[in-house]
Image 1 (cartoon, rainbow, N blue to C red):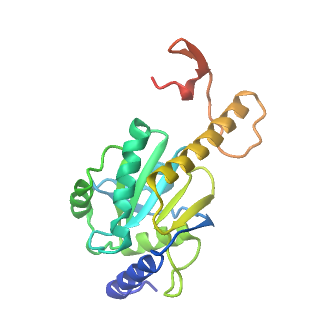
Image 2 (tube, rainbow, N blue to C red):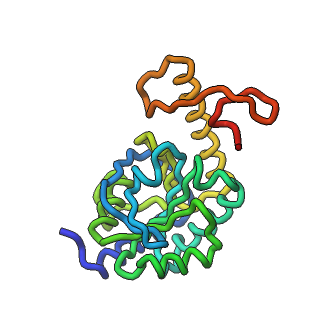
Length: 224
């Protein structure tokens, strides 16, 4: 049964605060719950289908009333947004998921996002308590309990189940390096598809060689 709002929010806060000191990384297997969520514009989205598929993802847990470590997560992601530039919303997706769906409706999330100057390609999500609980449980790979901690940030390939959880705040440059590593692996997988030796691991993506800025490259690598 879903927990009452106060007990769930206090538990979530305790779980996030508990992981603040230091930093550790943990591999986690994500499972995207097929439930409707709402972004800061009030648009209904399905996490995997509408936002994450074929993209490298940085997802942070937040809520607008947080005065602890999760209040730092949007600041980290704001700096990432600046470092990644126009890639955000194209091959990289930034997501902030609220742990307080009772208060964080889309207008409140939109106002909260505006405090951090959140630009295009950064989606802030909420939903019904049941949908948020199902989403969080799928992302951390286990039911939540008072003796467990949540990562502040998750980074992964939207087409693959193995992601990395960052317990404690990571430097924006460190997270960008992880994004670049995953992007390189993604491009290599697509090149394998072009070569006709797709192993069946991941989606079949159609790419082809083009001349871009005087150089021959794969169509997905051309910025135009």
